[in-house]
Image (cartoon, rainbow, N blue to C red):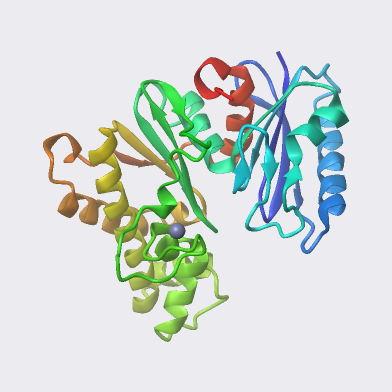
Length: 307
Ligand SMILES: [Zn+2]
């Protein structure tokens, strides 16, 4: 079976063709039209799909798996991604179905990354896992008992809104003190700038470079984010008795700068015996995870699709 995979975010529209073994046999990436209206984004997406199909030699298409930034109504696939103002209540799943004439499955993009890491990445063979992404936002997906756990509304595993500091900053969800409000890339850069850091572009990637070069404010900014992730995970692992947590996304590229303080905070806060050994690892599939996980909704639907 050959599946078209789509991974939609605020900065890129990724499309690819995935074979039954979970291998990407073609891949195409194009920037998400900034400030594009609904149809401009849709046209760019359809063009990207055609490119991916051309790249794979136009195989007969049997189904489409899609990951998209949230929030969304699930499983109807009506999406309103926070980072894409052009799509508000955009009926993505039904539009894809109409356009390409095949069944479509759709989930949150971070849920797709979790499915990918469980299916073909760092979580293979584990029955209980959190897969998370720390980038522009902080998202995640849960595998419990070997099955993707959707929750009541498809939002299960949304670790970004675990509260890590009751006195913490406001979060774009409307709450405050959430993990996402502290650890998402733009929040890391903003915090560093507020402390007087000005050693590059105001992005988490630049803060990471600066931290690696020994800048103390930049180091403190990454440390603060890493500790927040560690605190959130101590609670999450204790609650769900997980075997492993896989972390991907841009900020995970900070490596030890992030995972060091993360592990320390985790150890400080994980008291119960089954949560004491940190089982927190970097994700294995990198940028490909979104597409591979979208395909997994179809190719391994018995585990990852209950819509
Ligand atoms: Zn929040």
